[in-house]
Image (cartoon, rainbow, N blue to C red; front, side, top):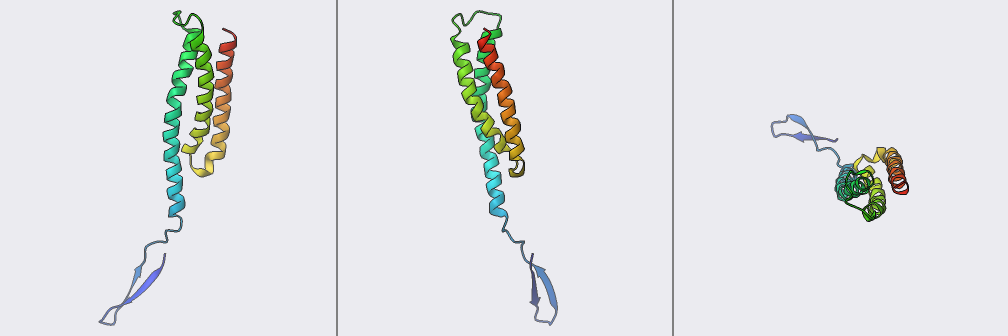
Amino acid sequence: MGVVVVREPAGETRLMTTAPDSAGAPAERRDVLSRIIGVVLTVLFGAPFVLLAWMALSSRFGWTNGDPHGYGMIFGTFLALVTGILVAIAVPLVFPRARRGAAYLWSMLGYLAVAAGLIVALVTA
C-alpha cells in the first residue's frame, strides 16, 4: 500500500492512501477459476458415476430379477470404474491449491475402496 502526499492550495498537507497492489489478484483469480471448474467437473462426472455404481450394485444385491443376464452389473461396473477415476481426479480441484496434494491422496484412496467393492461385487455374483 502506498502513501501519496497531496498539497492543497491553503498550504495544508494531507495524506491519501492508494489502492493496494493487486499483484496477487491474477493468481487468486486462477485459483477461484480452477475451483469452479473442479465443481463443474465433479458434478459432470459424479452424477453418471453414482448412477452406474447404483445400477451395478442394485443388479447384484437387488430383490428383483430385472437383470437376468447380468449385463447391467458387468457394464455398470466397468463404466462406474471409468467415471470413478475421472471423479477422483476432478474432486481435488475443488480444494484450495495448498490442500490439493492431500485431497488427491484421499480421493484416490476412496476411489480404490469403491473400485474394490465394485469388483468384488462383480466377481462374487
